[in-house]
Image (tube, rainbow, N blue to C red; front, top):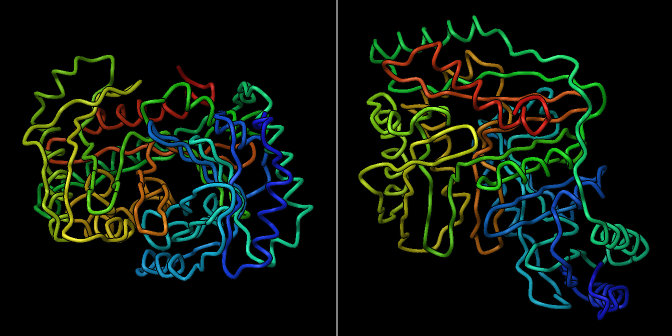
Amino acid sequence: MLDAGHDHVSALDAGLAAARATRGMSFVVLPAPVVSPAAIVAAFRALPMVAWSSRELALVGVGCARELRGRGPSRFDDVVAQARAIELGAVTGGRWTPRMLGGAAFTPGAADAAPWTGFGDAWFALPRWTYSTTGQLVLAVDAADARHAGRWHDELAAFRAAFGTRFAPRPQPPMTRIDPGDTGAWRAEIRAITEAIAHGDYAKIVAARKALVELAGEARPADLLAELDARHGDCVRVLVRPPGAATLVAATPERLVELRGTRVACDALAGSLPRDLEASALLASDKDRREHRLVVDAIASALAACGAHVDAPSEPGLRALRHVWHLHTPIAATLPAPRHVLELVAALHPTPAVGGTPTRDATEWIAAHEMARGWYASPVGWFDLDGNGELAVAIRSGVIAGDRAHLWAGAGIVAGSDPERELAETDVKLRAMLGALGVAA
């Protein structure tokens, strides 16, 4: 339970009183124990929500005090402008850095149809409540919101119940059907891409395929998130549910960008091999090293174009995940002056790890030949009002809508790619979500 040494109802009421007398958005900070983010997701099944769990930080945002939406080519600029327009009021009960949580579609317009309805081109929220494993539960209210004390008391009670219960995930309903998609058509697409590469039109295109899992009952995102926490603790686990939308869930190994002041960190993650094979084969693969080098060079070039001094190792290392080996190069950079993390997102996304190169040509191919990706392989994460933040790439992901799980996996296609091997690679990558659903190991 919440620390018995504090009267949280009184502290909440005092914070609401301060908010009623203050212009702008106020924050009421309450102490909280460390619990599984899934416990909070389970307690608020009907509200918009974003959960983020990395090795350094876990956040769960519940409800929306402010929504930030962007559309079209200016979507990231739109979100930044709306965030900067938020007027800050009082902070009571402790220190707090407000964070916006959310993400964006793979490309503008990619999330206009089911199962992505409601996600939009870019959506972030200043959550009504933010829970942090730093030991804080924070309510965001303005003067008008602060008049609804009864609602905030009820929601605080729901948090207290979640904190007081040890969360244990339950198995999902049994699978009734799995549709792997048209694998023959996907192989044909890979052959078409390799032919276009041979003609010199592209250097790389990332091809994605979709699988559909149908269950005997409604899938439970909280239990799915808990399984991903248990099975993929070395990845960033993300859950995003905008108002009126389905739920995106991911366990992604790929950090797009992290910004702290002027210090930048990115991951180049490309080149894959099933974990049951020897990692030395991946390091020795000319095809995978060429694919990986395209990603490293693109990230370094994008950061340099932002004025950054870039430091990247000359040789990749290995990233070992539950099902996959990846070639991995950590990239560090220093900016000459602070910038907003979403400016860097706009410059970096999509990297050749999820799109291809040349970037515009590859994304046009993807749009013409694939079902719309929605938020698959898209930037998801958080930023604060100083522009610092961290966003990951929503791979190893799926959308949960009722009794259906829509899953995606991709493979980078370069000269020398073999359709059978690439299909097998996507099968392995799908196992991250299939395993959490109880369908695979």
